[in-house]
Length: 290
Image (cartoon, rainbow, N blue to C red):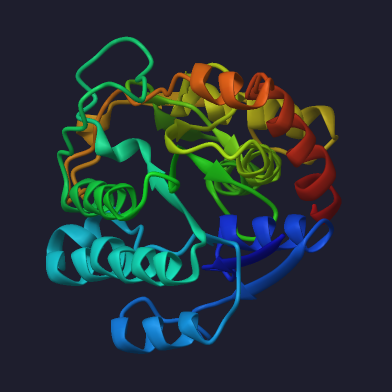
């Protein structure tokens, strides 16, 4: 299978590119090779390539920046997806569009299913939702994969941050009233391959199993760091409220845990509980650096 991966310099794109390089003919394109902010050049570049599947991991993901730069957010997260979907159609290829839990308003108390209505509460969420629509309207063979709370070895994320703070300070805190699900890029890469080989289409939620608050997420990361004998100054994550973070510009949904039943239906795979990949990540990638 010939696969093109966009956003290959990012946290998820790097892991996906590395994963598929071991199994398929993969072409990894970073921002230097493929800039989503330039739709004309984007179409021209894709038309020069030959591929069966395009996995779009590229996006403008800075939530507050998107809120104050709505035109740029829509251009990169929505209009560029329309261009990519059209390029895929010309090649009779499939588009796999990576989306986000932020397409939901966070007002429910149970994990969101793919059939639940998307109601974004931020420009970022709306731009990603418009990208979903663009992908799905272009072909019924295209796939939208919603993910959440991504971390991995290629770029620092929340586990790196909370552990680094605990290495330097005797008190650390994390939000205790915002809930979703962590997702390891290593696990996501395997899940994406399974979905593509199963020829999944439509919308599918993909993340690790279960859900947690940021505080719980951080606590498991510190527990794993302590088990790995990292020299922490504190082993406890304190609680703060989402409302206490006054610097946020964009509204954040409070509850965006994702149900993964459809992923299991397509692939036969059940995501591992989120604690397991997180502990492995801390042990294998963060502890050796300390």
